[in-house]
Amino acid sequence: MAVSSSEWVLASHNAGKARELNALFARLPVVLRGAEDFELPEPEETGTTFEANAELKAVAAARATGQPAVSDDSGVAVHALAGEPGIHTGRWAGEGRDFELARRRVQDRLAETGPDASRRATYVCVLCVAWPDGRTCTFRGETLGTLVWPVRGDLGHGFEPMFLPDGYAITYGEMTPHHRSRVNARAAAMRKLEHVLFGAASPMAGT
Image (cartoon, rainbow, N blue to C red; front, side):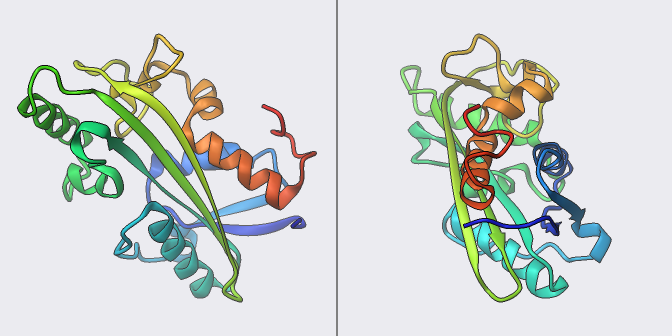
């Protein structure tokens, strides 16, 4: 499946995600326009999976604008907490999106489970592309790692300063945006999107 040069709506109200996705799409023949350009409301995320929430956001934006839309739903699934916060990652931060609070809540919950609790976690990102005619494609990326405490680094957002990916000595919060955007779950999902929609000859193929 291939797509031609076009303008897509970035169905995200999260500034950190928007920056990273704009950087990833910059190498592709697609121009992203932000949700704020169309004054799109932020839909309620009622899905029970990352895929469902990503799809409902992309579909809502595509229907409202009449243009293709791409959305992102991502979060951290902590193994010892039965996958929480998972799809509720943003909600753990409260209405003010206070991720310092969210990280503290995860740390407190892990402490309650005992000193031997596993700190293993999976960072998940699902990208969904929706077209005005109702077609959708979803792409899932995952990275495994360990949660650290105290958090380390101030270069990331959300749970990134708490997440130490396997094979690295620094957290996502200590990585430069360029480095992080090549090795995180969003990058893994993006590679799949590029391969399916833009072909194996895309600029990121094989990276």
